[in-house]
Figure: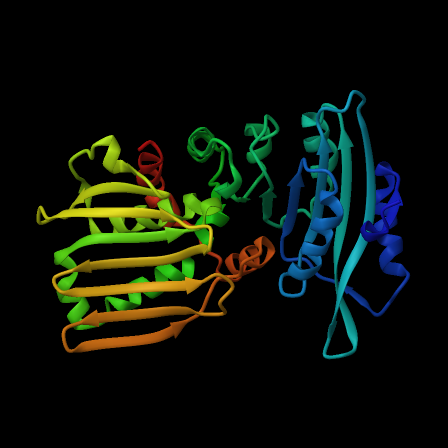
Length: 356
């Protein structure tokens, strides 16, 4: 029994049962602006993801397709459930979004495309939220149907190998594929805040003198720290500097060193610090020319702290934070839209940093 997923229905009768669902309550209005597919191979993910979709549909109307797969089960099977997530509009009429949940076992590649994707709302874009490690299910017959592919690389055991697969998918997709890493999305407000500090004329003047960078991240979010460093390097035009000795590069106490060179030839040392007490991203600090700028966040804090420190000049102000949960991060990204061109721009440099 899966009451959280709604009514179990025969796979061949899904469309008929959806029509009956809407006919049961004339106060409901069906709304969809996109297809949102949520894929997981973790046990119990369907119920968890149904709750996440309920939150998302409060702001983003969609047809939701939940997919749970046990690829290692000895026998092939498929079950389906339908429900609607409804939210009151002006205190009267319910605006509802359809949800279809599929539980598959056994070899699933063909059934995923032919059965599950047969129930997408036609002519609407497909956002595909992949949870967990990439598996053989992620191949061209899957991503050729996808408009935006969402994933969270923070938990990947081998991000180098997985990002190589993502890069190949972007290159070889038969139509433009927008990729969205939630590890990257976690740094959005940090990036906005760092950029805003350089609106200060004193800080902007000191930019060519920056020679030290420190980034603090939680141990589970090293990818976010590396992506933040890649963004700084790409946007500032820093080249790779002289190779650091291994003892310097892999410092003790959860630290890792990197070397860059500015466009003017100035040496820049960057340090990533892993801290169990940190937020996903806890600190980004740049120093040089007598000026230090930083953006920081305590774990669980409801705001960032933006700070400028220079002789005779000190400013401190709060800033907004990104959500901590994945559903909230996806909701923020959907609200912003865009093609994630900046992520694609920094991706090659980020992959180089992963190799160090």
